[in-house]
Length: 244
Image 1 (tube, rainbow, N blue to C red):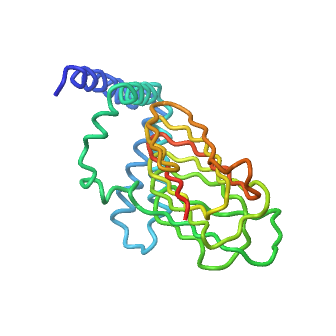
Image 2: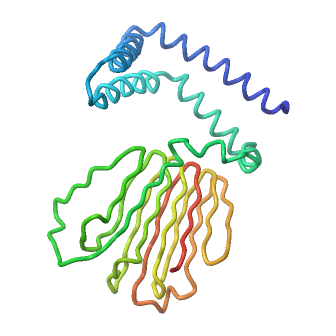
Image 3: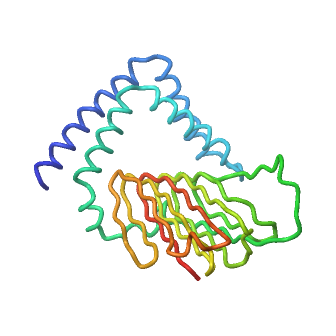
């Protein structure tokens, strides 16, 4: 292990001790932490079929307790800063097969189709934080895609729909995970990708980003009647836009 990583872990260890100290000395935060742990234990021991609400409540209390301390934000800030500087080479050299079952490797597939026009005002779509989500079991009219995902891979297939002769939008905010967009031929594409760490693959070109923003256009963007704007923001993850 290099001296840089030793220094990083030493700093993080000191910050963790400070974090535990703040948890124990703040009465309100300590009570929330105890309540969260107690709810998780009781949920695990419960014989109820649907334990998800209890688990979510316990996790929420623990997360709220953590983010209420300044030490937690220092731990996160140091980790992000160090990885953005030194971690890219390590991540590239990792054996990703060891993480095949990780939550952020779960696939989310969005298959978009069209039908007759339906009212758009007031439409609400429930979104998941983590996990597999499939859209396309029922036919629906094309509408701009806009969603947030904590972690997970996403595939958006536009091959089953006809985009309008105007500008269409895909807006994605994601913590960790890859995104792949399949676009029919003849559609002009604009990509605006912001990532702490990741790559963009588009028209045979591979762009590596480290805390950067990238804006690129397809070669036929100006002359295309149908235009698609893909606007994405991730902490760690790749974006692939492929013509089909």
